[in-house]
Image 1 (cartoon, helix red, strand yellow):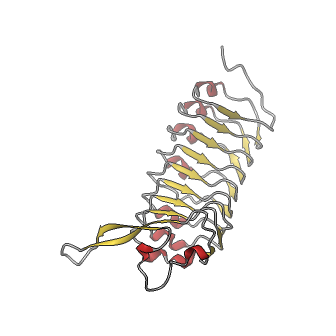
Image 2 (tube, rainbow, N blue to C red):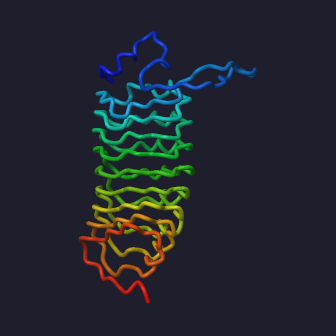
Length: 251
């Protein structure tokens, strides 16, 4: 990656002194004996720095202690390299708002400590990987890409999820009932501007904490389930631009 704001990233200099990089103390392994404490790169935050280049220039395998990676709002090109799965301690990954293409690598499923994943506003295509079984994930934004296929059942395993945005893609098939049954903490759900068909499942009414729901501009049909009236915390509801029948939600 290249940019005048990254002039400090020079060979032979201490990475802990580079702009956008933070380090922390970590005990490094040393055979069977107690390791030595050392500074390791744990945080890379270059949001809006506008570097141009490919992600594989970062050599993820050399960053085993990285916890936080934010490269959002830049001019990153090419695909997301599969070796991103080597970042075993990563909790926050934000690659939004760039020009990334290709599919989402299944190796992202190896990032078992992730709590925040944002790949929105890129040019990603293909299907959502079934390997996204990330037990600690709270925030997932894949909106505004070209992702196709149905919503995979692996999303239903994200039991801690509070934010799910799959809007402005090419998702098809029906809305799986597990969204209501297995994602009890959802506060924000956006499936708008896709090709989702069928009816809205009645299980949506189980989302007691839901505050924002957008299923507009899809191919949904049938009636709006009365159970949606159980979502008493809803402050924003958009079901526009398709032919639905609205029953009486309040007796």
